[in-house]
Image (tube, rainbow, N blue to C red; front, side, top):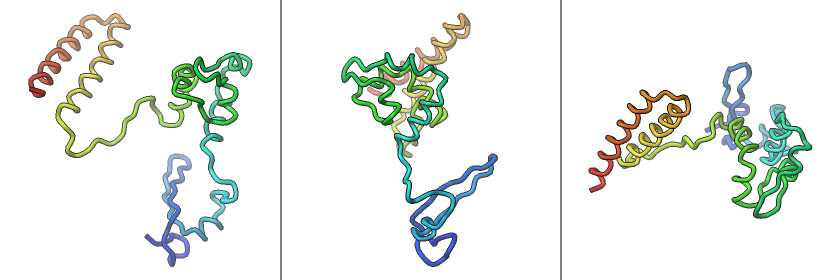
Length: 168
């Protein structure tokens, strides 16, 4: 693909700009990207700056976050805010209450919703449906919607039976 600007070199920088809900895709060569005013090539993007910016935007008071530390590696949340890096796998669990809004802010949700292969096993798709129904069942029970919960329970039971049969 050729550069949108000079139309001579191959485009190596691809970015999407969204302003007031209008999306624009841009494809630029290295030279045109360096000259572009849309982004500063001398100050490259840093993921830890993204995380630290989002954590600073949280409404939680700074004093409250100083006391939160990882039970495994001892990293405190204020250090994570400065570096954007967690110390170990346990940090995800110990900081989950504060990480969920950050991840939700970036992705728009807290669950992986990636692509699925075209030749996906029917069992995997069935298991996903069971998981989704289980989440709906939990919500129904929390809301004390017991009739809905009973219907969902029966659907889950039926799907698990189909899953068991197809696995054999």
